[in-house]
Length: 261
Ligand SMILES: CC(C)(COP(=O)(O)OP(=O)(O)OC[C@H]1O[C@@H](n2cnc3c(N)ncnc32)[C@H](O)[C@@H]1OP(=O)(O)O)[C@@H](O)C(=O)NCCC(=O)NCCS
Image 1: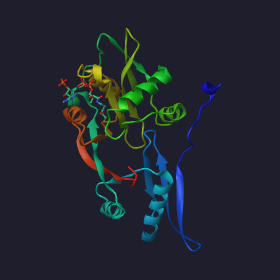
Image 2: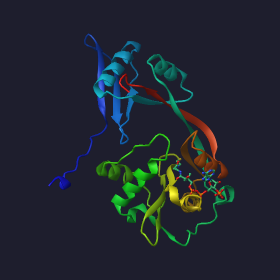
Image 3: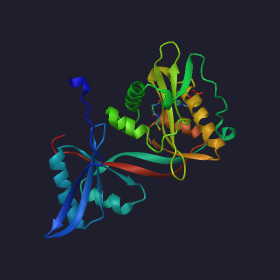
Image 4: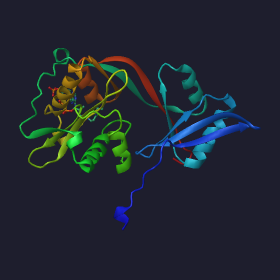
């Protein structure tokens, strides 16, 4: 019977509140991601609340704690440093043009042994397993394993666009080998992921997926998409640089190691 039981973690995470007497002086929310990493997010509160809140989260989770901060937010960076966080990695925020005359992504024909399908027509379990596999090579998401319910919710929410969430499938084996997803965001569309399984790389599959998805976006009048890329991810940085990506900001991921780790 266990095969029928599905456990879905409830969002939006756990909240701890700090009080001075009867007065609430601060709060922190901690989210457990599918890669088993805890991310904390403080409400604006009194300085005196941060350390006790953090100690309570660390004691309850028994884990390293992570936080993401805008690279220009010196106040937040100084606060996290005082609390014992150090830099784990950096991401650049980039704008990528969608005009094929600028990107050079003019070829939308898939390689002969591949077919490109929309996520709306995909087998959801296969797609989730592809996503899990691809994330192992994306800096910052190694160890990610989706819960089927969470994956469904994240994939098919209001930002889902069947015309720009595409999967490359090998014709003979039916294996899902790579995907592109451009989320339909308020403001500007966002490239959420472009990734290809290791043994299928450097065959132009990512370029074809991007060419297809960007063509749709460009024809709708959107001349750029946003994306985030890890500073150390050289294949991705060189791919995006070649397309004409321009950096406009960045974030810093911080970590506070658990005493036990
Ligand atoms: C980045 C990635 C998607 C590229 O996929 P791909 O199918 O191999 O890409 P393509 O074959 O279309 O390559 C297009 C161009 O990107 C650049 N590029 C791709 N991989 C590269 C590498 N390892 N080193 C340097 N440049 C690279 C090259 O300019 C390449 O053109 P070329 O082969 O004519 O030299 C793939 O390496 C990947 O899945 N990486 C892990 C997932 C990831 O980090 N995704 C990005 C998250 S933002």
